[in-house]
Amino acid sequence: MRVLLLGPPGAGKGTQAKRLTGAFGACQVSTGDILRNAAQEETPLGQKAAAIMVKGELVPDALMIDLVAERLRQDDCRKGFILDGFPRTLEQADGLEGILKAMGSELDCVFLIRVPEAVIVERLEGRRSCRGCGALYHLVFHPPARAGVCDRCQGPLYQREDDWAETIRARLRVYEAQTAPLIQYYRDRGLLKEIDGVGDVDEIQNRIRQAWGEARA
Ligand code: AP5
Image (cartoon, rainbow, N blue to C red; front, side, top):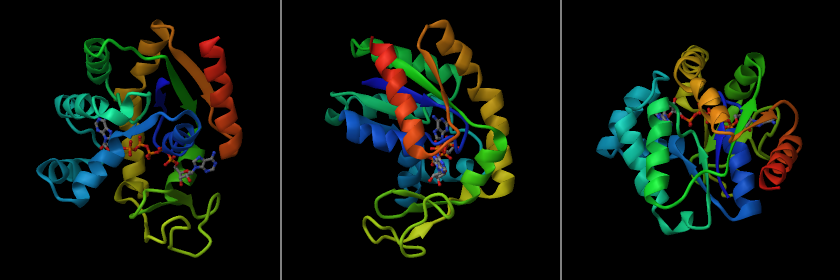
């Protein structure tokens, strides 16, 4: 499985990618997670990225393309990968095509998860993430058993700095201007599968699996 999940902030890309990795043995490549880890470790990349992410803007394309090229060459991606949060611009999409070509590979499918703006805001404002294992929660839709504590690893839960209302609006504007053109880009290549992203997590997972089955048929 070599696929990518496309969709606005809060569409559920990370939630669905984590489930798909379990089902298909492909690894999740989340550029957002890679950047947040780098920021937490205060590496030079992390420090640069943190200042950009907090404003809801995009990290420069050349940096992201190099980062993903290195990640996709790692052993755990050999069985396949689920890209979550990359590409985000036309330049990154061309970069990905080049990376895969050099590896003698190509994308199987692109899932576009569609969610209306009101749902996005509700999902992002209630999101909590685990500092330890990265598990995702939602205060209303998927609360942890004990407030502020991860069910899986007992790590502390936190709210992402870019999930405040003003930054969410900035991220949505960036998505429309810079990422939405990828919809036509992948439609033109016959790779796009549209998924209704409204409903519970299992329902959406089933829609993605069905679309994957159709893409493989
Ligand atoms: P990134 O981390 O990629 O953020 P994003 O794309 O904005 O997406 P999110 O992680 O916010 O949402 P998601 O779709 O994964 O939703 P989730 O599953 O968490 O990027 C962050 C920043 O890093 C960017 O702004 C940029 O600065 C930088 N960056 C990253 N990649 C880059 C790149 N390629 N180029 C340049 N810069 C880059 O779900 C959200 C919430 O909803 C959760 O609480 C979840 O529990 C809940 N939920 C999910 N599904 C459902 C459901 N069906 N019903 C109810 N609740 C649900």
